[in-house]
Length: 472
Image (cartoon, rainbow, N blue to C red; front, side, top):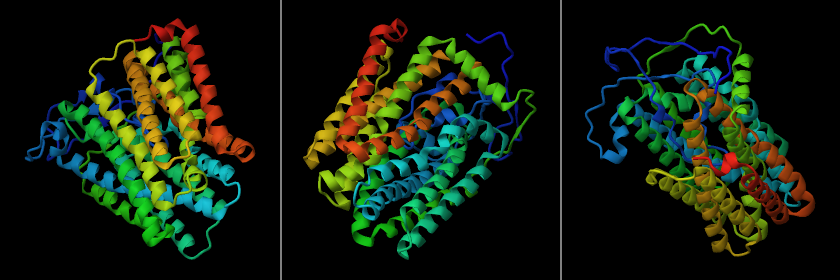
């Protein structure tokens, strides 16, 4: 439980809009808002970033637009959320197209021993999350979320145009790719907390869970469509064409953000400093051994296993001997597995002995990554990637749900921000480590060995920690 010290809370004051909200006072966010959401490396489960200081936010009473929708997609009946959903869907497809092209470009620029630089690019793109996963929620709560998103999305669009310009003109090089990847990661680390925190304020209370599920589906559909289109686009219009298409895709989300009727939110006074707020969350977490073990498992997977995604272009080109289209198909396999993992979590109502379920899912994930490392058949590799994506989502989504359930209401935001740091912030460290080792031992042996180490440590923790075995 929380320590005797006073917990900090950021007070939000809403200025309602006549045409968007009812005159009733704002209601407190329900606990089930913190339901599991699908994740993916590099992106993905960053709902936790919605705040360290925002342990409570407001679920507005929104009058839905008169649009008939099936029950499974009922949140789309709300005009603002519908704009938000479709705009981000198109933009995410463009982002995945750029991701696959960027990895392939590194391979072409450094044909001999590119593993190290793939790790460096992965580190640069994700490193800002190591800092802003903790502070990003506070930033999002102290600024207008929509305006912050417009600025960050515009910045990423400009960076995509810059990457296109240098590539099309033949002046691109790997250090420049690293610099642009870091700048893009910085913008993304500021964008993500606002993105996640906006969703509950675009739909009424009864549609919050459906909105979160649709957001998860949107992200995973883009993971399937984007890499597939990216692989074919590289063959048709070249690598630089992918960067241009990504830059243009930001227009969709910018138009959506400018069309949304979004009420301004003003932050009240908070007597505690940001660091005091964060420190209180760490003290609380270290007193809760069950949650601490779950976050340790997450950090272990993020550091030792998840970086394998950065090396898929290397496996595609140098080991499976396929081209741009084949690389895109491999990435799509991973996205399909993640999509079905999210669907499984959404379908299962109750998981008994969830601590055991988390460890078993993690073990299965590590095994399929190891098998992928030694596969030399294209279609078998694709199926193994799908299986790895499936079990990875089962693991991280269940951990997310357990942390939401186990943490006290007044500490949930800080606990989830620490979780996000473990999941997103440790990945760049793992990418750098894997890249350095792969340059000496080769990518297959490095990826397999790191995953094997994670597997052994996970089984050791499960066998020696009763708090994890009995967790539910």
